[in-house]
Length: 172
Image (cartoon, rainbow, N blue to C red):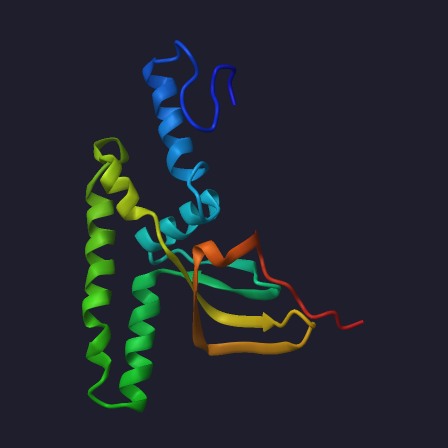
């Protein structure tokens, strides 16, 4: 951080536009109580661009969870299809949620970051991360294996740590 900045607000006498923009970025990505702001930004990017997917490893309550981050829209669509396949007629219970993700994605694509208000920015900060092709290790090291046709959803505030890429089982 530049001199005169702190995590709570602007330093004394620091008011130019460039510094205000930096402050807003910090406010929305770093200072927030709760999830890691950079990870939340990654999830928001995937939500806004469903064609993007990212391999990650998450540490959640002592467990290690590996998988591919996918958009909330794609995750709920997959849940809808799975529910419809096992319980015909039940798939539409997800339609409203899928539509909200679609609307948010379309809004984000049509609105520049500079045009957004603080409420708009808060609206685009995700609450959950959605994974596919999940591989889970329990805290005791027990591996549950890759669940390729299962999806996993977790509150971002529950993620204790994360990294790009996925772990591989030690075969030596």
